[in-house]
Length: 237
Image 1 (cartoon, helix red, strand yellow):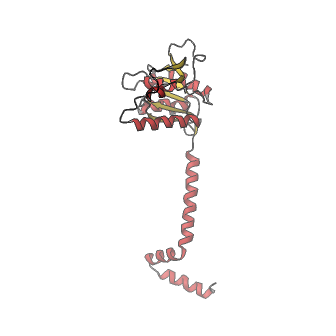
Image 2: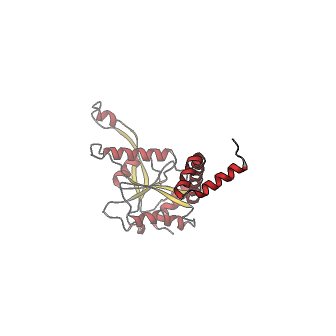
Image 3: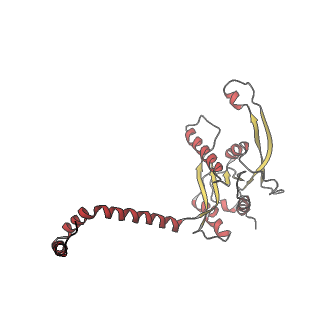
């Protein structure tokens, strides 16, 4: 029902006479739905604005498997790399997957974590969201044998850091584990699928004595960028 001018004036006068608490209660009672709708719209617009202002386009996706990069090392391998290629770290980024653990020792107490890490790697590879991977000896073996790594021989021929491993084309390991076969039989072929970067100046702050390897995921769509990244980590000009 539409109020007359006199009624609206009376309501305004009554509202002015109210105390702060009464005014707040009046507004909430009679304008609750519009206020909630305004709040929802404001939050939605704010979320979109924040995402727009903070969004960064990935330059590369990098994983650390079985090794933990100290903060200063991770910065050198992510933000500093973006700067080195002339891009703005506020607009571009190297996306890093940390603390992934791959192992063949299925009886370990942390088997579930290792299984989750393997699934994460598989999903990232299938989704074209993994390009380069740092590895220790064990994860290098696992990723190479599974055929995940690109053969780097044609790109780094003569490089002393180039390391050989193998790809397993077929295996009866499941049958052996089930007792259906006595001897393990595998068909493999060699591949040079990683660079040993243990002595890279960028990795000086790594603790431990393990070797560190760097490989490229075979199905990456950013091969040129990944090769440039490997050269960056090696310290090539």
